[in-house]
Image (cartoon, rainbow, N blue to C red; front, top):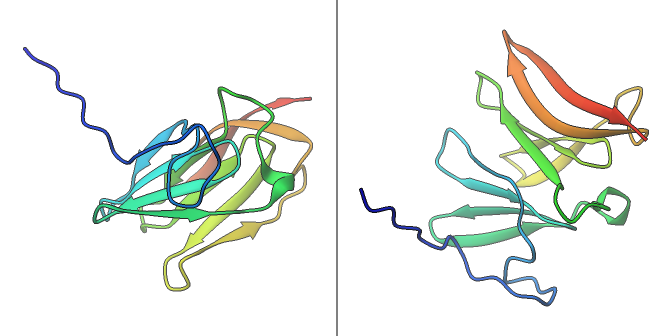
Length: 127
């Protein structure tokens, strides 16, 4: 068996709006878009086009290894969490990330985000 690895998009060691900058974990949503978390951005690749979302400095990852985690509800809602402990929902109609507030936001690290039986669960660790 031969394994072939295909690059998703061009990257750079410098921060730009048109290239991936240290992408981390990835996710493919139900519409076929590829989502990647980066140190300071979330990326969507759809129809061979890269779109970058800038949630803001307070959401940037301190970790070189971890940044964003992604999951999708059975109804097709895409959710993501920053490693720094903030939750977002992707608004497909407005093509933007919408912050969803919760009690412990910003005081925990979110390592993984998943839906089980219609409920959203986060694997977390304290500071």
